[in-house]
Length: 299
Ligand code: PDD
Image 1: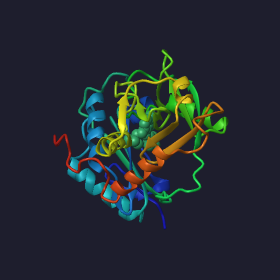
Image 2: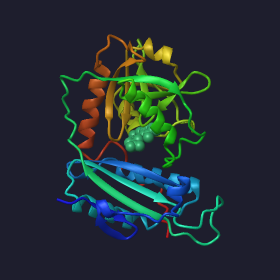
Image 3: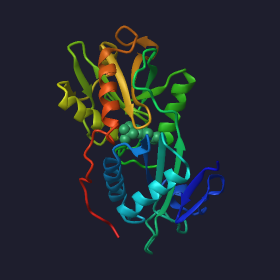
Image 4: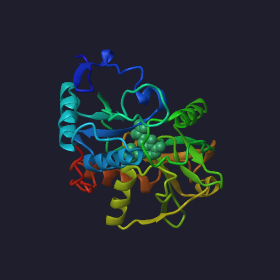
């Protein structure tokens, strides 16, 4: 079966999808994106993702290319036309096409919208042979607004590549004061020896992951002690457990940092418990509210 992409109003063969050479996304990374996981044909935490998309657009003063309702219809078409049952949908919106000038174009812009979907093997709820993943630490070389889900991901790409070159799954980014911000494409967490789950507070130095928000909610509902504060790599190495979260990774135990073991060097019980809770919530479309928190319909 051929993959189908949605590109500016048309469903096209994936290999033939193209945008204009003066698209500002191509020239300036002037755009934003979302990645939403699909589980048994359902989007996980769809409304929360669209709320964040709305926030990213607002921050960059890019208009919605179509209404939120129309966007949801197109998302469903893309999933259907690609016969995806388990996998992900990728949405990208850029400011649009204009002669290359740094400032925003004077004319009213039609933002470019691209969507693709792909099938991924569904992650199993029980992972008895889970060995966890390794991370490395590296300076956070990104701009100061990583809270915006912008397509300007070159620092993330370089850090991820550094992790892969070291045989690790992820790079934990460390700010100028020695605190971990987040991973290059995941949020970072630790579990202290006295069972406090710690993750950085949402302070514009991280992306407020939808999966992060989902786990915050699940922890509050299930008696976990969560503290949202900064932590260092040294603290993570002294922790009982560590893990990362994202829409695609869901939750993965971190068993080593820079080649040194975390805890006993094996995935721990906190991650196993959280995984079970998340998998159950996903059966119902995800842990987060099913109604948009921001109901502004643009256009
Ligand atoms: N990455 N932090 C960064 C820098 C990210 O790029 C991501 C997501 C996350 C986790 O966010 P969420 O839980 O909403 O997926 C945190 C996506 C999956 C990507 O770029 O492919």
